[in-house]
Length: 328
Ligand code: GLN
Image 1 (spheres, rainbow, N blue to C red):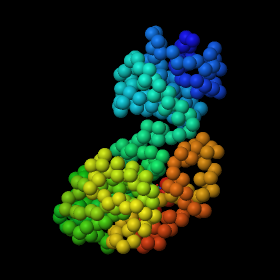
Image 2 (cartoon, rainbow, N blue to C red; image 1 turned 90 degrees about the vertical axis):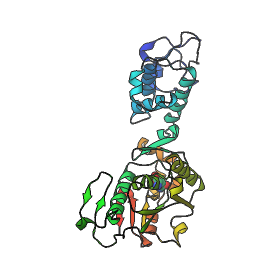
Image 3 (cartoon, protein in one colour; image 1 turned 135 degrees about the vertical axis):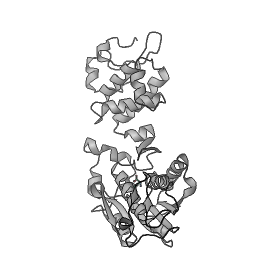
Image 4 (tube, helix red, strand yellow; image 1 turned 90 degrees about the horizontal axis):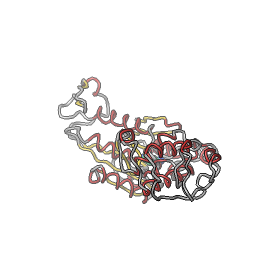
């Protein structure tokens, strides 16, 4: 069998048996399920592949072109989007094409791209993610930002009363002199409850690293040993494994007998009923692939939020709708 010749539909040879069945683009094909033929003359450029994957993902993704770009970059072991433009004419090898097909077909099942690629960006850094952990959300970046503000305001830094933040901006004493501010040299213990991929606590470890004259004790808890293993991999990847204590256990149990100054947490907060409906709408289909224990917040979604609030420990918590609540 020869590959499809009609390039106007820019279908790649070799999307595999039956994989595109039902997709509108296939209606034009004289061969509904062409088998791959990787012989001479079957060349496929990066640009063609990009167009094909974009078309094929059209009904399965909110951002088909972006997904296609990231799939191709991943298959080519490249990171910079500019690579795609600069190398639009290169031929993909059969192996690279097969890899893009595999990823495209996973995406068509509704699997979030982060799981397909095995990584997700958070606060400007890349984190390893697997279906054992929640995919970091951009709302959670605001939680980190608020936590940093809280911590920096309470740590006076090298000169009492003046805090020098990473940008060198001096915050006058009046802004930092409020109850709860720690003394220079004091240790501040911060616990991330339900750390998942570890994105929150690892980002704090990295962002706080440059703050002088302060000592932090960082703790991460999770009930799932598999999630903790990923969090540790991420900590090692970012060079902060020795700066964080990873404790396995349910919610606050691992910190029961420890002094903690601040809790940061993005606990499961989806109302159970809403979670049960995930998959009915395309925009919530991805939730089906994430650990349900990382999403299910009980009947009203607030079971875990309440547990943290009941501890009486100052806390910055993400809650329903991605809202950040601060309890001091
Ligand atoms: N702390 C992780 C995150 O925000 C995991 C949260 C969770 O599992 N609910 O991504």
